Length: 267
Image 1 (cartoon, helix red, strand yellow):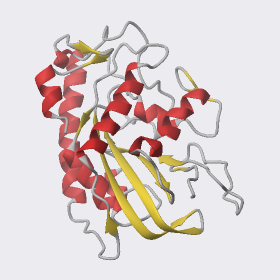
Image 2 (cartoon, rainbow, N blue to C red):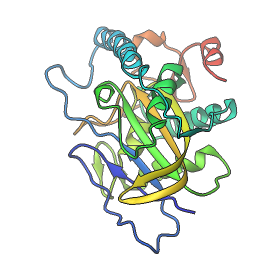
Image 3 (tube, one colour):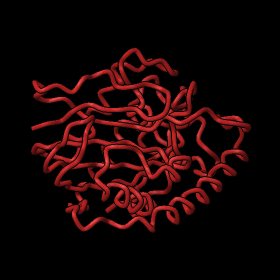
């Protein structure tokens, strides 16, 4: 079984682990680091700005769907459909991690499943390429990747290494290990939408080696996180700095939509 740890895109951090013949079990994960904001401030300081950004994110998400819907799945790739149970497991895992950050988050938003993001993740995963993409969508999305050639008991086994990076992360933005960006994307406060896809790839090139019968997981996030030099969230009393669009609703230490909305967005 091969599970190897990952890679970084852009100019931030490169994974330092060398792929060797003696590799028995390394967890593989990858996330996108973006370039710093240009122009407007990255951290919004008013409810009006937050609402405007939310509308902009919705427009961007629509753009992403248009960009990715034309990507067809090659016939040589075998799809493993993501199940309702796996969707719930991914959401529950992310929201549990987000609710337990330290120091506590004042503006952490509850994460919901987004079928558009899932479809764009599936379109990209269908190519069986170990890289971030598609390039034209990456200015709108955050993205984490994971891959394995062995059996796993739960889909959360594929993302646990992202959470383990918390051991190297020091709030607000210091990383003492090889990479922290998978974890920070998971807990980026304004990232409130998630969509993932699984694909079984007959052959895929990973750091120069060809892996056979590998399972590739692609998770897309919106709004994207990991802006260079910024904290993933504002510290403080939970829900004390929620965007006004939540109307003061707080659930499990997170700015939350009403319970009915939470139910409707779960599978």
